[in-house]
Amino acid sequence: MANKIKWNWGTKLVIAIILFMGFIFILVYLSTQNTIDLVERDYYPKGLKYQTRIEEIKNASMYFDHFDIKKEDSQMVLSIPPIDADSGSIVFFRPSDQTLDFASKIQPDTAGFMYFPINEFEKGLYVMKVHWFKNTDGFYIEKKFFVN
Image 1 (spheres, rainbow, N blue to C red):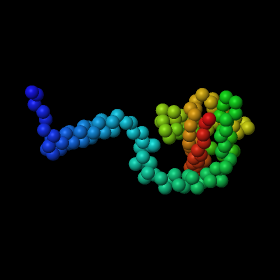
Image 2 (image 1 turned 90 degrees about the vertical axis):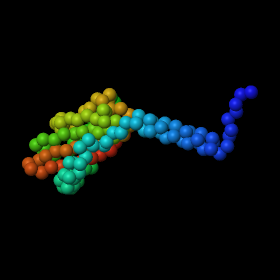
Image 3 (image 1 turned 180 degrees about the horizontal axis):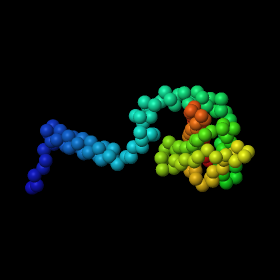
Image 4 (image 1 turned 60 degrees about the vertical axis):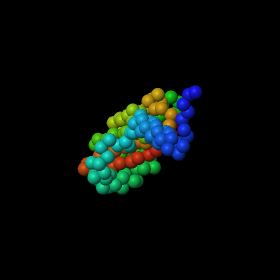
């Protein structure tokens, strides 16, 4: 006759502890497999300079409604008001995947438009960040838009 395991409370407790520890190890393993993307890599220095950003947003408030981006045929068209910028850039930020971010200098045509090929954009949410300088003043605008 084969020996049988006695299923008393001690045996059940040991089995429960082993199962619980196995569950915890599986959770630890799964949590180490997740990637964590920060919205900004250098968020601490940017946080310290945020008062400057607040001033730039206030400076650009009168231009906010004049920046508009929309899809036309096979391109995204950005309309830019006459801002007379000394220098500036546009960043198309994808919150869900930083590999889809890209930037461009502010260089509108004579009609005030900039064109971007639609294949540079994946479907989803983007944040357009426009930052420019005129004389010594900084200006900053953020607008969210969806690409379908």
